[in-house]
Length: 344
Image (cartoon, rainbow, N blue to C red; front, side, top):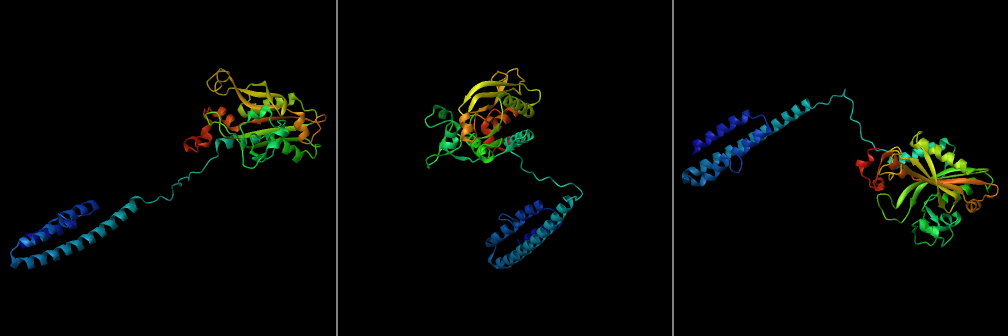
């Protein structure tokens, strides 16, 4: 048995000297020093030897095991260093190559449309006026010719808060009153502003409606402003936003704060007026509601309606974005899905 042990030891050392990779070294360890390895099994067989041979065999087996273990650890360290050096050499960084571009965020599609809208109206002489998101009931409704219990209040599903008379604005129209008081100087100066901001309505969320959405209000107050000014201004805006070749049409409508009131349609961008599911096969897409500022609203804004007139309009940036890109579900705008957002 002792002679067989020495043979195992010699063969193991010879094999170890030829090993140059980690995988082969692992196999060697299992074969010689593992739980079922040759040296381990030899040690377990000590009890089967005659008594007079056990001590010498066991002592020699332990010496061989310790030596092979030390030789294995030394070879393992050497191979690890060699593999590391080889990996560094093969995977060396070429400093002459251009660096990888770090991914950056982008503008939300609604924000992109908003900025385009700002630029168009700025070019047409309108300045941006920011109004508050949390409004009082009087400014949101009463001063806009919608007194308490007026049936027109049913047109807006309102978020009320615990404080009586305080609400989340249902539209950007209350900003008209604040803009007239801020810039009108007691009804003596003309006003020409757009009022962008978020609106809130307690509605069922669907593919076409959300509980929050952006809106851009527009207001112009001056002397001798007429409906023809409003129509020409909105037609020019629509052509700049959707294309110079797009036709625009106006339909009669009703809003409590404008008289007369109209709705503005632009020729469908996707089917070019031929009819498709997006435009409900009419060839037209609604983009805005508008009208001449109601005398009561002018008066509540500090102007004499016998001397001053004006027009107002309301645009939906998300809706315009949907029309421009053929998006059929408004919920994508607030879903925070990067697969959608990174397309813009």
